[in-house]
Image (cartoon, rainbow, N blue to C red; front, side, top):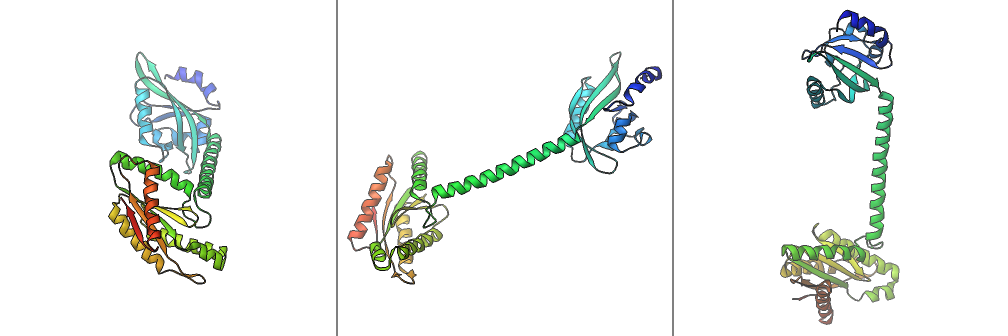
Length: 309
């Protein structure tokens, strides 16, 4: 841009509200002019900017691909627009909405003009809004988890309830059918549980339920699904487990339960019925076989494990 052209523009651009700079077409983008507004927001005096590369206001957090895109755009004689984080003289941060125009004379780029609008205050408000939105999302997610726990966890024993089991067992049956994987189930029933309630009261009965539920929960693998089936019955799903292996686990649980001792009610035992999913089983088939095995265990004297194939 020759001096006469520049003198015509200077009175206009010197005091406009947008930050205005002109730079050379070399690789560094050496600054040849900066108006008052650009000096104000950057913190530099005009003489400190003239002769310096554009990198003087580049913020280290801005990815290099942003500047690569900028240079590719203006070198192709197009206008680049975007929002860019900048660094001022004191090392602080300000944000500008930027437009970079290539000045083309006789099909050659002779200079670049950069017009920047300071939107730091707006950007900070947006950042606050985003931070608040994230916090609200986190709070709502925690609230949802709490509600899910209320919906899916048995209030007394603190293990999954029947509702959650019904949801999970359908998924496990579909998985076993699709991938031809082994799936076994056990139903356990606390022996003579009515005696605890009748002899010691329902509060002691509740403590016995909690004691056994916690023991089983802490003994099973993380991959097993354990839930209160109802009353004094609990159910276990053994993922990727054959019938004999499930029977072995049930026996270990039975032995462990028989060694537990409530400080008022004393010793307690449990009976187990175990079965394995068979191809094309309905949920009703699966549960019925397991229940039949449990009935057999109780009929054969209790405190034992029976299987149903």
